[in-house]
Length: 501
Image 1 (spheres, rainbow, N blue to C red):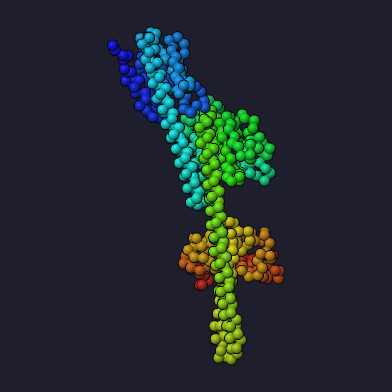
Image 2 (cartoon, rainbow, N blue to C red):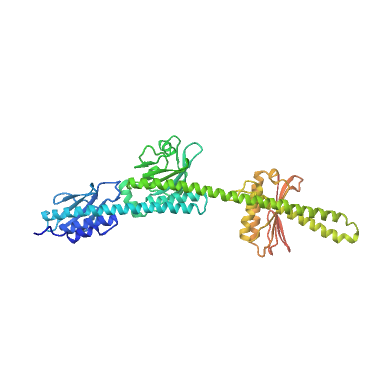
């Protein structure tokens, strides 16, 4: 007594692949080989399936075409007890021959084998997808905790999430003063011409656009989407362009989308949005779950990174405060005491023979006063918040000279005289900074410059007697030039700028 014949080699080969798309292609290739059909096409049950596939074809052209009409035979395929797709076979070899009973038997064997293979491939891909999201979340946490600004941290989250979700863009929105939300960072995916043509044939034009064009788009206060997000609930959208809940000016560019609250310890940091292009498949339930978990972990990482950044800034502030106190308490007081002693000694030199000593003491007192001014300038610089644009004139002058120091290789000397903050108006301060910038640029271009002195005198008197401010920039370069007023001598170049206050 003999049993049924063993399955053909084409049937056995269906389960040899782990990747889902390769498995589906093997199914249609095997169907064509077993039956002698000229065309074999597999269509899945529709968008939103975890397999994320459409039409797979075996035949002369491999075009995504579903056979129709006489001589066409269809076979359903079930996976894990649920309908998955349908095999379409057409044009049996021999010119119009019908599919035989043996063909049908082999196809049923193939369908059973295909159901098992597809189920295994789906589970393998689901496991790989979870692994990628977990690895992505861990990579984001590591990146956020190793440094960078707040904007860089948000961009890291947006870009990694965009890649994991296979989205057209990854954006982060934050609250605005009027109660809405605004896109503050965006990362977009490059699209090839072939991708654009395929998408446009399905849904019409709607490129994701440059990230800079997306940043600044807002969700108006009171939007149903905003109410849901502020309540800590994710929002899933099938088509951003047509969903009435979407109100941003860039919504027409996108199709399916996820909007996920970045929330940790009851604190809403912002919203992570992952829109796909128009015509792309909607997100599956597994993808939604993985993205929600990613957003939750990313929010925790952002909070930890912010706390670390704050601790580092506090340490910098404390260290700067200590240095400033030491400079003020020790250096300035000692320099001032030394200057007082020298001035007292100078007053005691009244004889003609002491004239040389008097001149030497005078130069020493001038040098001490200049040193005290520079130390006080350094103390002021230490009191400025790090990595922030200065708002005072002193701070802006220090920033300009620090920029020049990066090119020169040494720090210019800076001295302020008089109440520069209260005496110099903002408009005049802007002109002064422009003149300083030009003078420093000219000095950095001269050869053999090893010393630059910058003096800002807020007590200067103009030639017509009006009160003014005077900027003097002197360098010891071997070749010189002129500024608003200036000159070149053997000992370097001096540029002077002045204006009424």
